[in-house]
Image 1 (cartoon, rainbow, N blue to C red):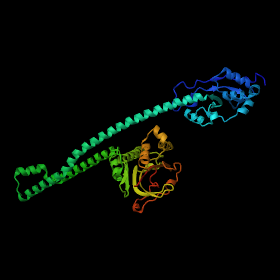
Image 2: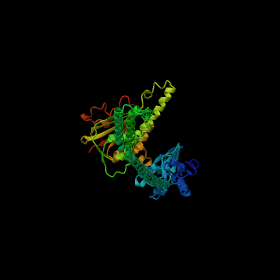
Image 3: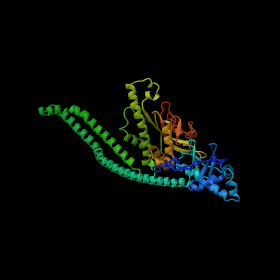
Image 4: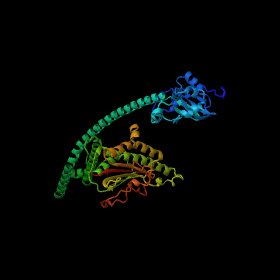
Length: 494
C-alpha cells in the first residue's frame, strides 16, 4: 500500500463547553480527540503520530471511510513490547494489530450525560478501565480520554454534593420557619379560644336571664292591664312584640357563630401540632372535617362535597402529619375543580360545539370522601384489617405528563431533588404510618406495585366487612359519574 493512500488526518482536539459543568452536562461538553486512520496503514505510521502527540489516547480505525474500530495508545505499546512485537506490528497493516488487540469498546452518544457515562465506564472489566471512550456525534467518531471523564465526574459529584447540602440547609431553614409559623398560629388560635370560651360560657346565662326578664314582663302585663301613657309609648317604641321573637334568634345566632369560631380555632391548633413524638388514637372523620373547615373559604357554591363515612374505630397515627396529607390532597382537588368551574361558566356564556363532547362540562364539580374498614392481603401474608380513605373528584383527570411527574416524585431519588406536596404525602403515609397511597386517573394506577397496569390487580385481594355494606360503592371501583382523579389511602389497624 502506498504511503499517500495511508495519509491520515492530523489529530484535533475540541475545547468542549467553556461554561462550568452542571448536573445535566453531556459528553459533548468535554474535550474530545478526533483522529482517524485507515486500517490498511502500517503500524509505524500510527506509532509516529503517537510520538508526535503524546496526549492522544488512541486512533479511530476506518475502512474506506467507514468506522472499523479503535486502537488505543496503551494497546499499541503493550503489543510492541512483546517478543518480536516491533517486527510484526510496525511493519504489518493496522488490521493485524486490531485483530490481536480487539476488545469490548465503549461507544456512547455525544448526548450521554457525564454521570451516566462514568457509571458505564466503571462497570468495564479491570483491564479495560484505562481504555478511551468512543463518542459518536452524528456520523463522526471522537475519542474521550478516561482521565478527562473521571475529572469531570468528580467535579459534577462535588457540585451535586454542594447542591444537596444547600437544599438540605434550605429545607432546614424552611422547616424552622414552618415550625415558628405553626407555633405562632397555635398561639393565635389559643388566644381566639379564650374569649370564645367566655362568650360560649356566658351565652347560656344570657339566654336564661333574657327568658326570665321576658317572663317578668309578661307577668306585669297580665296583672297591670292599664299601663301609664309613658310606659305604653315606650313599649310601642321598643317594639316589645318583635323583641320577644328576635331575641332568642339573636342569641342562637351568636351561639352558632361562637361554636363555628371555636371549631375553626381547634382545627388550627390540631393542624399545627405536627411535632408529635408518639402516635395516638385519632378520629379520622373529625380530622377530615377539620381540614374541610379550614378550606371552607375555597369551597364555593359551585363545588359540592359528598361525605360517605363508614364506622371507623380510633386509628393510631400522627394526627398532624395525617392532616397535612388530607390538606395536600383536598387542595389539589380544589385547584382542579375551581378551574373546571371557571371553564363551565365560560362554556355557559360562550357555548360551543365542543361543550357537548366534554362529559365533565355537564356535571357539577364534586369531591366525594369515602371511609371504611377493609381487609387486604399483601402477597403471601394473611389478610389484615386496614382503614381506607378515598378522596375522589370528577375533574378532567391527570394528563400523561402529570402522571409521569407523580411517579417520579414517589421515587426516593426524585423526591430528594424536588419535594412536592404529593411526594410529602406519599412519604408520610408509607414511611411514617406504614400505609399505602394510590392515585388513579384515566385508568392508570400510580403509587402501587402495578403502576403500569390499569387492571387494579394489586387490589384484587381487597375485601370489605359486612358492617360497612351501607356504603354504595367500593372505592376500588371508580363511581360511574366520577371521571377525574381518585386518591386512596390505606392505614393499618393495630
